[in-house]
Image (cartoon, rainbow, N blue to C red; front, side, top):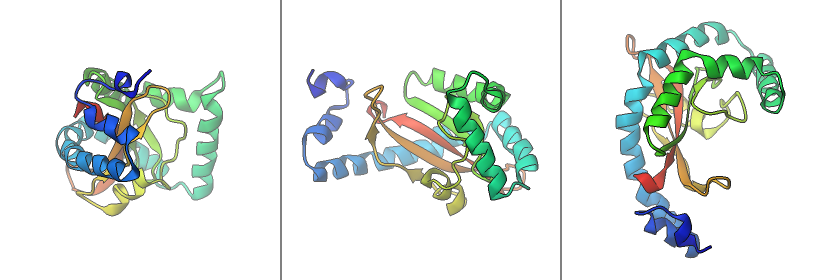
Length: 198
């Protein structure tokens, strides 16, 4: 199958990334930085500030605020073990909450533009998500440290990468989330974006 058959209409530039040199890949990624940043500051900022998301983060911060690194590691280990287990109490509780259901609705309504959406608390722990993540703690990753850790107004755009299972070229866009009442940062959101749909 040719690379052009893997790409959606309008994704010609991505075909060039695949078959050309490293320099072309860098140029293509730069090409998507501005539209992804604009998306972060508009659509993503809008659904990240939904009351269901804000209340879920604040409720979890009230519990996780006292967690030390040992507790965070314990929960992350539990989540990773549950991914392939029959019993999934931590995963099920997170996936079933109102904020996760809201994010799933946002992803479904995007008609494929959003490939994943997940929200983290002030420790970088999952609060809500549209699809299952492989781990529970994101606090040591760029998606958290370069968004929440960088302060209000920060936007982190990851490299464009091809998802092996879906063949979709995507970037993860992450921004901090603030309490609308105080302006204080309370968490962060990461959104996988199919760049062919920009």
